[in-house]
Amino acid sequence: MAASPNLAVEASGLGKSFGDVRAVDGVDLGVRRGSVYGVLGPNGAGKTTTIRILATLLRPDAGSARVLGHDVVTEADAVRGLISLTGQLASVDDDLTGWENLVLIGRLVGLGRSGAKARAGELLEAFGLEEAAGRLVKNYSGGMRRRLDIAASIVITPELMFLDEPTTGLDPRSRNLVWDIIRALAGEGATILLCTQYLEEADQLAEGIAVIDRGRVIAEGTPGQLKASVGSGALQVRLLDPEQRPQAERLLSDELGSVHLEPDPALLSSPISDSERAAEAVAALTRSGVGVAAFSLGQPSLDEVFLALTGHSAEEQDAAAEEQAA
Amino acid sequence: MSTGPATPERSAEQIETQAVRRALTSAPRPPRASALAATLAFAWRGMLKVKHVPEQLLDVTITPVMFVLMFTYLFGGAIAGSTGEYRDYILPGILVMSVLFTTVYSGISINTDLTKGVVHRFRSLPIWRPAPLVGALLGDTMRYLLAGLVIIVLGLILGFRPGAGPLGVIAALALVIIFSFGLSWVFTTLGLLLRSPNAVMNAGFMAIFPLTFLSNVFVEPETLPSGLEAFVEINPISILATASRGLMEGNAEASDILIVLAVAAALTAIFAPITTRLYRTR
Image 1 (cartoon, chains in turn green, red):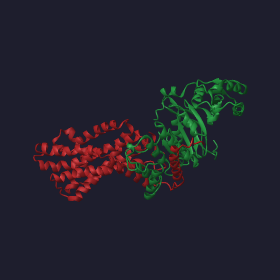
Image 2 (tube, chains in turn red, brown; image 1 turned 60 degrees about the vertical axis):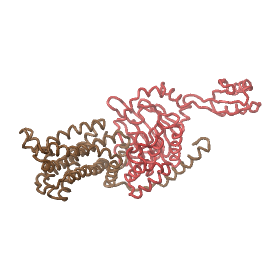
Image 3 (cartoon, one colour; image 1 turned 90 degrees about the vertical axis):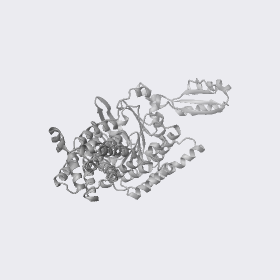
Image 4 (cartoon, helix red, strand yellow; image 1 turned 135 degrees about the horizontal axis):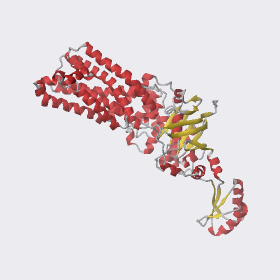
């Protein structure tokens, strides 16, 4: 495999078995430098094992992978110098305070005593944890813990961050905060490999997504491409006046073919093949005096994508999860 | 990339996002940590744990304290003819016991680490591979030192006046700690092989308890049946206890000290690589 300078991660044919469970079964991945890339799949799909291999924590028993140009097996130490792990994979120490955790990591990545302390203070402040700095991490809330996790992984700037289910178990507010942090990191040019079982999370953050099921990549593309592969989207129109719905229905069916009347009396939707036609249809409505309160171009959700790709829903497989993260 | 509608609630978080960006751009780029720096960082972590979880130290010191009091005053007269004489015999032995019991906790804390995600972070750092283990054990020697000091202070309160004075006591304590450092590698291996911290505790004490009792810590081996006497004579813990008594009284045999150091070195040579390997692969 030739090293490509534009790729932060390139894996081909990665495989790993635990006993007779083939956790990873021929995974190919290509992650562009500077992008947020989502690895999506239910529990037990092989995501975590794949990430563990890429992060040099596990040796693959088939295939090979290069991270930032270095082989994950033969140049593991070089890889370790450029990556950082966060999330379910690599957390912080419960029995230490937040400040102590960050100073410890600082010392371990090569900062001097005073440098590590200064950096710890800076990060605690940036992540809104100054007040909790002296408290033991075991007394932190889930959201605070996750923020500390992320802070610990940027004590020095990693070229590639592995985020393994960074928002699992968080309330919506903490989740949004973590997402904002991830966007900020991405905005600064870090490459992020985001492993998640939440389809919405990949949709929100990732530019490219690989869907993993039963140890294999079953689909790859942008969130939009994945959704488009399942089928076209829909135009949804909300009227100012429900009385005008029959008129709107006629106009939309002329423009777009078929119309579906939603249970809400002010709402209509039409399947569309391209968004230009949809724009024309909306314009036609306003031209003929139908008041449009709102309209949206809906794409199928990634949940629907997952169902279409695998033939089973993401939740179904949770039950059969085998990801015994060794 | 869309960041959603800009509601007032959102803007507070936006400020935080700015701070995160600043923190990222201001990140230093130091050279890699040296093996020594990484090891010392882990030793610091170990000592912090003694500070934050003092109960653990309490657990291991209470039993020996009870033993000192019980054996001295309850059995002392019967075993050695007088409580004072038995106290002087048993105190260096209990020092050995107390510190050796503490070594089991090195295995327990390694196992506890494994059940937490923090080990993965350590393993993903570009550091000298054995640093987390060597550092943890160095930190634990602080624990051993404290456990030893508790017994020595108790002994002094009870009237124990060792013949070789403070220097002898320090030498004995140092020897016990060196031996414990070697022995603790056995328990870290155990800690990496067994599933739960509880299993490590049970297995550890199941090994260390009989080994300590089947030594000369409590009784002179001459009083034992011959088969048992033979075992007690070669038990390294007996030799360690004898050497500690000797150092405290100023009549230690060099051969005893050498044997203790050799056993500690051998345990380290055998079990340190096994532990390091297990730590990497588990």
